Length: 125
Image (cartoon, rainbow, N blue to C red; front, side, top):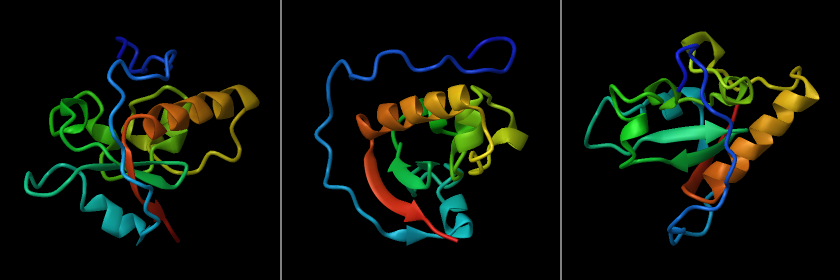
């Protein structure tokens, strides 16, 4: 994260050590249900959604309480990712009105997450 409150755009999508990922799940989650997986309860997994796909990012300190990307935990921060922002007010799922460049950045983030984290559900509602 830079001093301007922006995150760097993903450049290399291939993980150094590719994880063995489970088959994607399509369990439905409402925003209220997703919010319970924000890392505040250490006994629960931590989830982040990108373009309504929910990823299990548990075990990654970046998303844990106090981590630089904790603001994304328990949310669909698609707009924030597209705009390379870590501002709480940007952590919303709406992205349809973004520029083509921002949508490309968001697609890159989706690719990044898809190659690293298990898909555990889909944001509905």
